[in-house]
Image 1: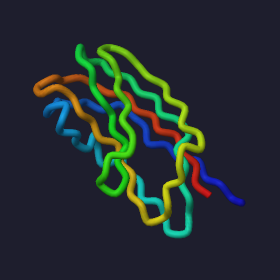
Image 2: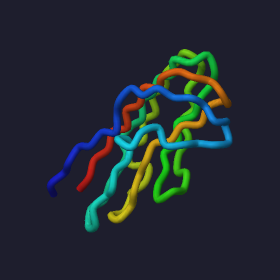
Image 3: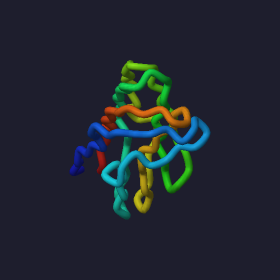
Image 4: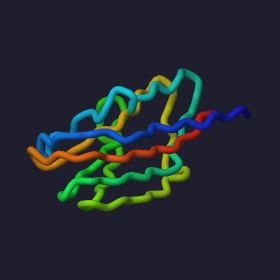
Length: 115
């Protein structure tokens, strides 16, 4: 079985629209899982430069799948190995929810494998 490692990662500025209003962080943080392929998330690592709690949301086909809260000026590492399979034809994205008006940068690193 051939496997392919994938990463949605980078450092991105943000301005919060409210904790109840997650929005895409950046278009680079979107991945289409090809038909006939299974995607598995392995881990999420994140950092937050702002003075408030923010939440990174893993979204599948427009529906929130996992929430990763990151404390003020803090970081998080969440192992996800074999949590669940993401079927081919799905779109996965990283969104961010932050208190309204809060600005900062978020560091994200979502590690995945496809087979």
